[in-house]
Structures are given as structure tokens and as C-alpha cells.
Image (cartoon, rainbow, N blue to C red):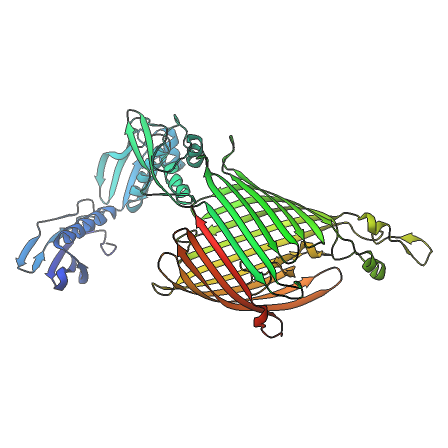
Length: 589
């Protein structure tokens, strides 16, 4: 009640009228000396809520320094009206505190000027100060600590008091008890919580623990973590229920004849993901892709949630790509998770990548006397990755946002090709040289990749997905195999899988989803991308557009999907004879 002043006695009258629909209308009159009466109207649902509101107002007065605020009996004036009075008394503006028997580590919380000598503190702040002292004690193993004022003296509009501290018993954490059907090993729980049996009680660890548990992909809390105290022990108790998180995902696509495909090509994308193996939080994923003509990709990755003596774990991914008959790409990705909570995670990333040509075009080199756009190379990439996930469901989201941002520095080294070293040229001084003679083999690149998704519910059965993605690779003498490859069902619908090359691109995707029961849905979509393809030999800009429709159908064994999409580049017309059809299957277990 910020309208109450520091002097005088205030009288507050409450008038209550019971209205329609069992609601109570509360008319609040504030009457103080030298202050005009003010009227406030508050709507409540019942008479008990009125009493609760009156109690809340008394507490509010006391928190502002009206220490002796009280109310008399609530009187009923007729069948529908009630009246009560609240007396505020004198307002005490400040509290003159002395440290009393506070231990040294808590005195430091008061600030040097407070515990060396008593200084006045605004009354409205003293309760916050005492609460802060209690919270500090709870972080030192004393959950039942009490802090209160002693030797209280009232002097004019000031309170003089000494702080008294009662620590209560020192409580030590016991092992974590796990309820429900989710299996988690004790060591993994220690890693997640930071709670070791025998360590002093820390209340903040429990709060952070709940946040981390809510971020798990394979389990969720059914209620907040409880703590049972007995003797000098504090035993956390978890109640977890499992989430289906193991995934088998398969997509089969049909790509008609095009400039890249001379005939109908069957494309495939298979993925198997296993979570929380042996109750350790360990995650393993393997994937296989086949696209274009003769292009195959194999990937294996693992997420190790913790390592002894390290707070967070790391992940490793191996990827091998054979792109047509042109080159072989090998990737080794390492990342260390430095931050993780319910919504946000941050990783430090290192990637080692090698390119080995399967075919070398020496004729093109002899003609142009330049390094070809495809070349043997090795790169070392160092970066950081941020992820934000505030979706209502990891697998079938209908509301919320997600974002990923990767930024990295790349050091690339061109590996001299033996066949190209044998291609010699004669300069004006009759000296022999190769394409490597004046070529800088080392270069530095900067890479940025971003993806943002927003699921917007329009109605109970209508949902819109808006997605914006982009990437940038900045450097000199870029190679074709270093560029980003987009196209396909998961990046740019209406185009062959990974058929579009760009070192810079921005793509937008919008989907209108009509939601059906059991995660089934019908989808209309439109996507568009703006691309820049900058290579050693040329620099081109292009624009791609695609649209189509799809459907997810839930069955007893999994989720079936079918998508039809057609796309075009630049000013070309949409060619429905070159439309792409994808069939998919997703099974959670």
C-alpha cells in the first residue's frame, strides 16, 4: 500500500457486495488524516478470499514500516455487505541494525559499513536483507537457519535492533533416491546435480538440478524434486517419467531426370538414435544417406554426458562422404559442452576435415593454369555453438521457438596433388613452374551458420511454422567441396538432395499445418533461398523457390509421411515433371 504515509493513523473501510456468479466486489476506502479519501474496487470470488486480501494488506503495511497495523472484526451490515477497519499506526522509516551474533561469513553479506557499526537501513529493505542472510546460510549447509531481530527499541520513527542468528543443525546430502521407471546410474545423477553424498546442503543445487532434469530428452519430472530430512541428512527424491526418445527415421525419395541425374534416382536417408544407454545418459546415433548419382554419406556420433573430474561431457562425430566420383570427404568433430540448462546450451567445437580427390581434371589445369575448384585440402576448425530450445515438444512441436548459432574460424591447407605437380608450364624466362609455384597454400576462413524456427498456434487445429536459416563462409580461393550444400526435404524442398552449392545463403520456409489427432497433420509449404556461389574461378548469384504439400499419418507402429514438392531456379518456370516425392517413416521407442 504505497499510498500510506509515514505519520498518523489510517482507517480503511471495506465494503463487500456479493454479485452475480458468486463473485464478491470489494470496495476499498482509504481514510487518513490530511489525505482525501480514496476509493478502490477489487473483485473476488468468495468471502474467504476477502479475508485473505485483508491479511495481505496488513502484511503489506508492516513491510512498509507500519509495524502495528491491525484490523478489527469484519462486520456484516446486511445480507450482502461487510465492513472492516484497518489501523496502520506510526510508520517507522529506518532500522538501525547491528551485526549481533552473526558469523563472519554472513556479516560480509551485510556490507562492511553495517557490521562494523550500526547504520540506518530503509525499513522496506530490511526484510530482504534478512532473507538474503537466510539464503546464504542455506548454501552453507544450514537449511533451517533463522535470522531475526533482537533487543528491539522504538525511537521516534526509527527501529534499533541487533541481528540474532540461529543456524540450526548442519545438514549433509545423502544419496539421491530415484522414483519412477526411468533408470539412471548414481554417478550420472551426481554429474547432473553436482550433489555428492556427504557434502553440505546447498539449496541452489536443487533448483539447478530441476532445470537440468527438465532439459533431458528421455525423461521429465512429474513433480519438483523433494528433500527428506532425517537426523543430519538431506535426501533428494526424484519422480521421473520416461519420454520416448529412441528414434528410427527413414526417408525414401524419387528424383526425376535432371541436369544432375540422367535418369530416375532413388534417394534414401536412414537414421537410428539411441538415448540413455545403460542409464548413463549416453547417446549414440548412426545415419546413412544416398543421393544424386553415386553420392553416399555415412555418419556415426556419440554424446558422452560426463567424464570423471569434468563437470560436463563431450561429443564426437565421424562423417564420411563420397560425392559422386569426384572426391572423398572425412570429418572428425569434437565438442565440449560448457553450459547446459533447460533451454540453453553452449559448446566449444573442433573439427578436422580432409578432402581427397577421386578424379583430377588435369586438362582444365593445362587450359587455365589455375588451381581447380575441386582440390585436395585439410582444414582445422575452431568455434562455438549456441542452442536455444523452448519448444513444447521435442519431436512434435506445435508452439515455441528454437535457435542454433555456430561461429568458427577455419585454417585450411591445400595439399599438393601429385598429378597436378607433374603439369608444368614455361614462363617468359624459360623457367618451368607449376600451379603451386605462386599459390598460397594456407588460408584463414570465417564461418557462420544460423537457424531459427518459430511455431505459432493460430487455433486448436491450425499451426504455422516460420523458419529462417542462413550461412556464410568468408575467405579467399574457396573450393567447391568447402561450400554449403542445400536442397532436399530437410533444407530446401523441391530440389535434389544437397544439389545446390553456396558459400553464402539465406533461406526462408513457411508451413501452414492443419493438425489432426495423434500427431497427424496436413501441410502446405513454400520455401525460398538466395545464394552466392563464390569460387576460385567464378562468382554467381542465384535464387531458388519451391512449394508443395505433405502429410503426416500416425499409425500404431510409427509416423508415416509423404511430401510432394516442385522447385525452380532464377527465372525458370516450375517444372511439374521434375517434382520430388518423398516417403518417410518415423518410429519412437
